Length: 319
Length: 246
Image (tube, rainbow over all chains, first blue to last red; front, side, top):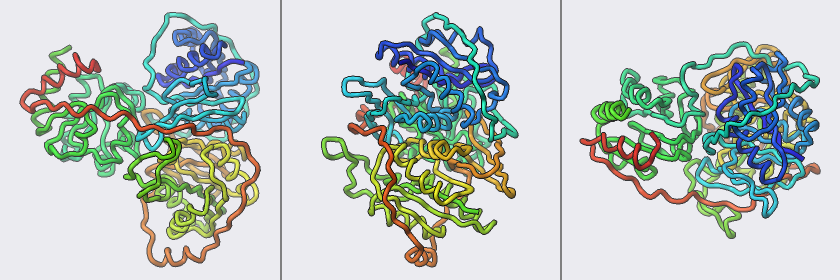
């Protein structure tokens, strides 16, 4: 019996959502009085992987095969299932990020394990293995009991704050057969130099109230002063003012930053579904009747073109 | 070519979320149900575009009770040749995936489309599970899908960017915004849907691996604290000193 955590990486750097999953899995292991290991696939520096011990694992299995540098859900599933067998893992933990969404369900089906995705609590072991998750696009929570012997939990990103311990983990090369990837990656475009929206703790978002893409400097200046990532509402992405990957809401990305600043966004229910997990919501809108104010923690009723530059200045003054 | 589109019945995006029976059941009172938007707008419509371009056959499947039939007829009204309803009520993704995989194994599909998630349980599990049960490749969260003969070129989202994948059919794909533009069924489609074949079958034996114990609503917000527009610096002070987020 043990806990195995899948930690995905980009160019040798383990994603923040994966660190959160490692910490979550390590805490599950404590609750179960067992040990936790992480598994990292693809090229990565072993010395860097040893620092994953910061988040509670004592061992990191590393499969350095170059064929795993690209994520193929089927090949990854095979390797993770082999590792789970070797480690006698009965709880497998994934980050509920893009890779986790592709791989966790496959692994669950392979191991005939009950799956809970988007977990926002540690398991309650009093009545089985009960994990709380977001449902109805963040408008409610469900407590789900995993009744199978093997369990798979995918952890909601930006839900558990990281608490590095300073400990290091032992890194072990794990050798296993690797099936050829059936999905080829032809091309990859990642916006560099910015925290991905899905992992951002501070987000500044703009809506139709900004009137046009030429005014986005307002959003970008505030984001830059805060060290935040920019986002937008659906009409803005649909109009092509901003790229689709910035769109948050029901049909875009659902995010859970510590701070979400909405500028010129009215707050339709579909938009709220993508941001209602934010810890603090600030709404700046000239319409006092904008529905977003009902979901906000702080608000300013005013003209964004006058108010936002002053906020940016005040943020700079703070630093 | 045969395409299967997985359809789920969900509450409308604007539905009031409430629970009954000591918070163990979703309250359906006054709730309008729709085809899960990801299944309809992206998975189904892209499948119909492929049908129009290549003459493919499009099948729909849902796992649910008789109450899901209006939903599947609505999906048929958009297009699609034939539908299957597997007569089971389940909230466990493994059980549901096992039903869909059993139908797919029997029918043999070149392409299986699901939505990226349902807007009620937000599980994101069915596509990957069906792919694993059928030992097919899986591409998740696709925003664009092009077909050239037997080769699919798929643009999918990754953290902070996009990736272009290539895969030989058969494949399972979970679909999101960008795959296709939403369509509205026309009268001819609605009339035709009434007579399209809808086969009801009993579920195959499969294990249920999870169960929902209870639901709860998030605690109500304390209410917005309004800051005067002429003093935005006060907002920054509150975010720093009170909320401690910056």
